[in-house]
Image (cartoon, rainbow, N blue to C red; front, side, top):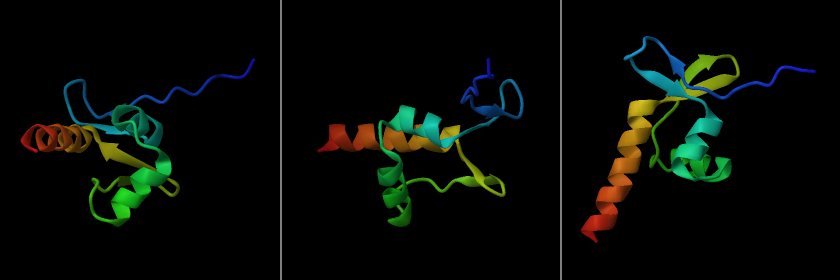
Length: 77
């Protein structure tokens, strides 16, 4: 049986900052991949951090902040 790859955030320290991969960002935001990249192109979503040649991750704190901004905008208007 092949090993299953788990999509877990990468952590630098137990209480330190973490990076979320695409699937985790999609779960947290409820957005599709194409919508995330559309928002990125429009400058309306946090930019990812390059992790390697073909890998990126988003700082967990920036995704949490983006979600908080959406919630604040909802309650304002």
